[in-house]
Amino acid sequence: MAGEEYDTDSVLTVPNVLSVLRLLGVPLFLWLLLGPHADIWAVAVLAVSSLTDFLDGKIARHFHQRSRVGQVLDPTADRLYIWTTLLGLCLRGIIPLWLVIVLAARDILMGVTIWPALRRRGYASLPVHFLGKAATFLLLFAFPVILLGAGPEPWQYPLTVIGWAAAIWGAGLYWWSGILYLGQGIDVIRRFPKAQENV
Image (cartoon, rainbow, N blue to C red; front, side, top):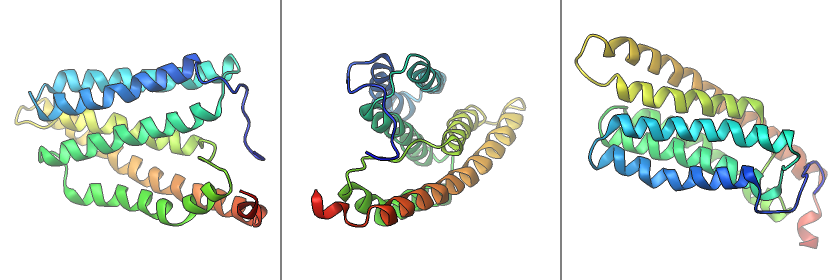
């Protein structure tokens, strides 16, 4: 597809395996958070997820293993971690509902505007933007820090401040990246107005 760069059509690549492992960690994280309230272990799962997220991109670029499957798996894993963390922390009463709504509104906007038209043109996703990765990093950093800071101990207050600062910046960048993706999607739709007739 025009505008998309892939190095391989193979599904079984190291970056894709890492992305699948990240996806398998989502239910484990949610269970640790909501079941036994094993917050330290839940944070450890998020840390491993962040590490594999960093590694799969590096490996894909360095060893020329960028693939169509990987371009779908990577942002899917990112969003699942963001949403499971948001919902879990909201159900625990650690973050307010308004933050969930602010972040959800961005994805809903994308989902009802450009994504249907892009899929009709054969696009499963758009190329991952650096700003989107930065937003994801900030949010996935903020949530576990907020979780660790949720308590009455004096040492937890600085964690709360740091976590919320990162969450607010992350939410802003999440919306900014969404606006950029919206612009990219509109550009694709304008450049390929008749593509859906051939699908």
